[in-house]
Length: 189
Image (cartoon, rainbow, N blue to C red; front, top):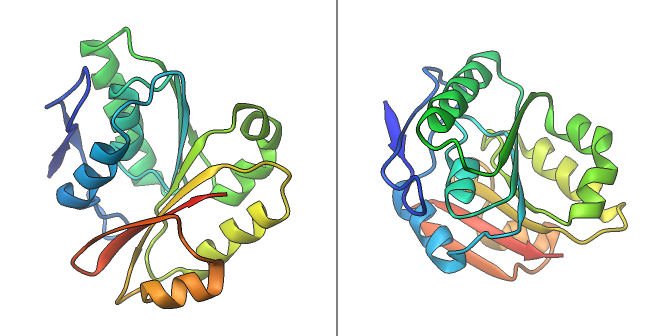
């Protein structure tokens, strides 16, 4: 299975997806709604935690992000991510910088705290839907930090929690995009 980059200089470029039950690609409709609302990532830093194939991070890169950090802990997905990076740069060598790291997301954030604090990135988080503790972990991390990132989380009403419950637990969202039971919830912290 593959997914395509939807816009920017690498529009139409095909990315492989990991052959694993642990990852699932983001819906094209939902991804399009998010990126159509932002459009231009010029001069921005983008962090994709639980990156899977990297399709969200590579989309930001294609739309002008200067730096993209792709963090993935699952071995199979990480190798797919590295392969996608290599293939993308073979065709589009002038894209911004991409750094792929095999790491658990909170560990990566702690290790790269100064980088994240100085560059004020947009942070996209897409953990396995049923792992509520990862959503808790990301909010606990940022509630104890001194910098306000733009935080975009992907979740599912059936497997994670309903949007209303999410907002009661973590605060009122600045923006929400929903496609079926899956949604992006956005915080400009």
